[in-house]
Image (cartoon, rainbow, N blue to C red; front, side, top):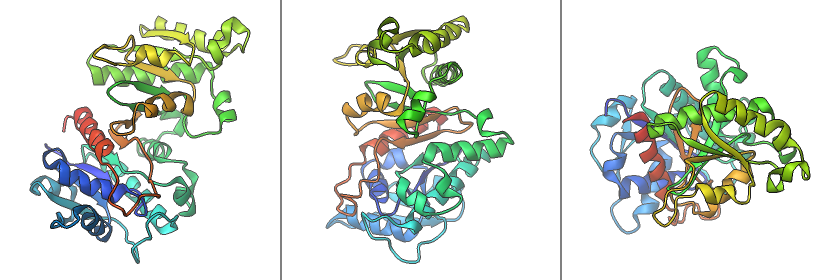
Length: 346
């Protein structure tokens, strides 16, 4: 590795610190060269929780990201960012925890944009705690929008000039979303020719880089049965199909629109058989994420497409109900680190 990978702390009241400590405990080679952008005291507490009766992991305080490359396996490097005046209570909304979680993401994004780190992997933050943190963090509904804003500011562009999309993926299915964290009513309004075409172009470019070839992309309709020829809505006829046609004219391998209740089965890799498609473009958040999450949260990875940096994240939230118990599973975080290494070649 020439550059380290930063793993942001996430919400200190949730399971983020625990799954980070477990990742170092369970996969010392995979986590070698990574470091935590966060809080030393929080990570020391997490190592004690996950160690049980065993001796906790060693924790090293570093001052620069590059120092992480020299830290031996089973030693967890932490770069201190901000501070918590006192340990936060597990499973409780806390403005200080939300503020620190956001500050860690902003720092890591800026470090990636400066070229100091190869990628960032974000542990879960809590959107309500983020809202409690106050300005400027409360204006962002999640990681994706926060990272988009940082990348746009770094490039001197508007948000519209830095379009991003969320992809959730596991070994069986990849889904890219037209809209992300908005109300269902706003998500329907976001199904425009421009947004659908832009999603297809971003998905094509990003997946080509990942797969080393042009991806086969399926497109889900918005309405039941993909509108049934206009009987259940005209969005497929007037918006989605024309965007697909334009994408094909640009040389993309795109098919659809398909009925949303069957397209994910066509794309799924199962029982040793490859799916018909490499990814599905879904029209809104729950339409696309329910199928992926139903297949299991253990190995799901959230990848932000369209950014001039590599960002991945585990496919779950802060799990306040089990925070501090040591029960949290690090599998999705380990999958996110693995994908970050692949994408950044770190």
